[in-house]
Length: 430
Image (tube, rainbow, N blue to C red; front, side):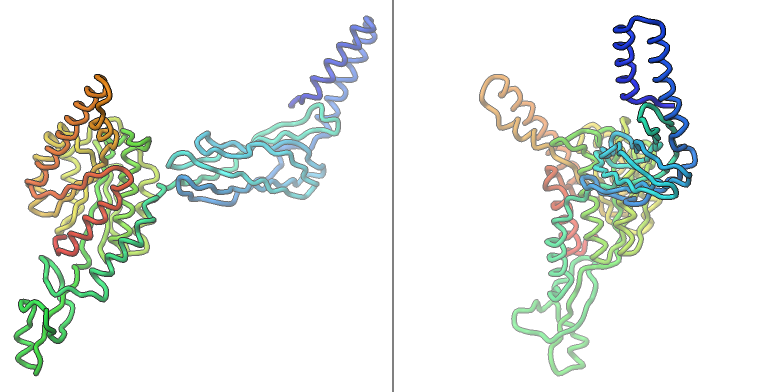
């Protein structure tokens, strides 16, 4: 049973009547009328237990988007249902509206639509649906809850998608109509064509020329069907926020742009997410399946407040990538973590794979380094300069060991990582 505000108002009016008359008869009469009204409402209200509920609508959303989930409420009973429906979701779903006034005729149904504007990645689960069925006087009614399971997976936002047309245009220049006459390491033979003035004489195919009346040159295209292994560091450094966004989310955005570009280029893309254990693993699929698989795997990832195990990452990389691959490690250029964890594993990894380390640079450090206004700003500038020099030193150590390094602020990291991939591809160094 559930009481409404009308019952409270009726009780207040009854108290005033009793105080005015000051008789036991008035007290008994007022209480009797109120209780009779409440009992009548409870008896005449439509029962809530037989109600049937079903959901439909969005099952996947990208962070930053809104979607709708519909709840259909069916009343199989002989009485009309007048009342309130509360559709409960977890707070991060930002569901609106959470309550609705409904009227369902006997044997009829009503549809209630809830708009979700999720504030974090992961799986959003619908909680119970609570229905309050009121009687004709609206003093009281029946109340009950029903399970109406539904789940919405919130995917990473992929805001760097806007860079994809530009990168695909550059890819077409590398692999489209403009075939290269210069062979990079690992580039693949494409075709023969007639020599024209200005062509590099080193591209002449003398054997084919000997069989023809004209001089022929070889053309090359960037290598295809290479393996790109993206490794996400989900350790404690990934939890740090840069410009208000966790490093892990920025790394995911860069990884999605790289995966979309590499799959269009004909390469196979795989993903590993690890800290002290492997959190996610996606092996290379077809061109149309790799991006959905990666976004689905990334949706449930969160940074763990623990130090990452570089040995575990290296062992997992060697187990997953059995042929030569481009290994892209998205991590932080933390001097202690790199010196103690990554550097000792580079010789083993570099002998079998091409390594690329991508990191999110904090633009706040550059702002600190430029400050000279007062004594506090000068101290901050010294701290900023030291942080920049330490970061530059770590990058230099990695480059001396043959590792490509991309260190860029959040808004430029996805584009810079895609450019580094295209540069390696054009040079035949994947």
